[in-house]
Amino acid sequence: MSLRTRLFLILFIAGFAGVLSLLFVDFSSLLTTLRVPETSPVDPLWLKPLSLIQPTILLAAATLVGVSLAPKVGLSAPAFEALARRDNFIKALRPQIAPGLIGGLVGGTAIILSWVLAKPFLPAEFVTRAEELNRLLPFPTRILYGGIIEELLLRWGVLTLFVWMLWRLIQRGKDRPRAVYFVVAIVFSSLVFGLGHLPLAVALGSRITLAVVLYIVGANSVFGFIAGYLYWRKGLEASIVAHMLAHVVIVSAIYVER
Image (cartoon, rainbow, N blue to C red; front, side):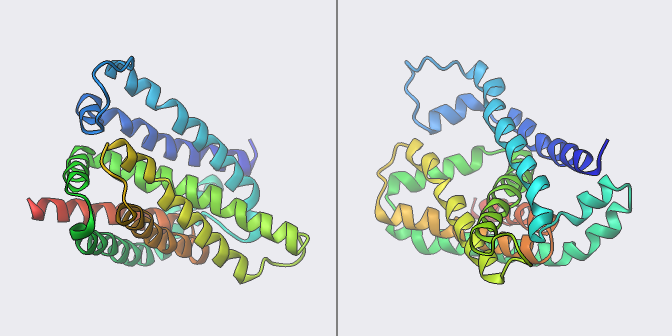
């Protein structure tokens, strides 16, 4: 088995743990919060297995993109790559822990502050339903799906692909990619990350005002920029650590607010 194949399998298995974490979600309560009509043909019993299909396909695609293109543009997942080479995983992970923790604290705090500042301008119905949704999301799902799956999709997949495209189109694949390509790709993937949260806001059934859009896209894009920078400068694992810790900070704030 080649090194690339082993790395793909390791990353896919790690990501699939995040996919399986969706099984912890109480879909009956979730459908109520998302205001899905009772006449909906979707049976909550089937939602759990069905919810695994799409993220699994996206995970496989993003993992393949990263494994194929990241080495070409100087991006990496040092600890996972060490594991694929059968080297010391912990030793390769250690340099990424501190930056990841700092990024997670800053990012999580930024999201909380964004909520506090935006809340007075958001529709009351949206605030109520968003808070309900936050309480419904199981902690394992936040950590594993948010921390691993979203980083594999947005950083390992989207950000890597965009840097590679800029490098191939502008530099014709010669020399090392310029720093500006990484910055542009980080901004782009951050906006995609922010915009990707809008459908969930729409599903809450509340009015989608300009304040709602600015809050959702802005707060998530800020964190996306932090995670993207960590991935570029330190490695994929640093962004994963940051994403996981950001959720810990957010959950802690939710419990304090109670």
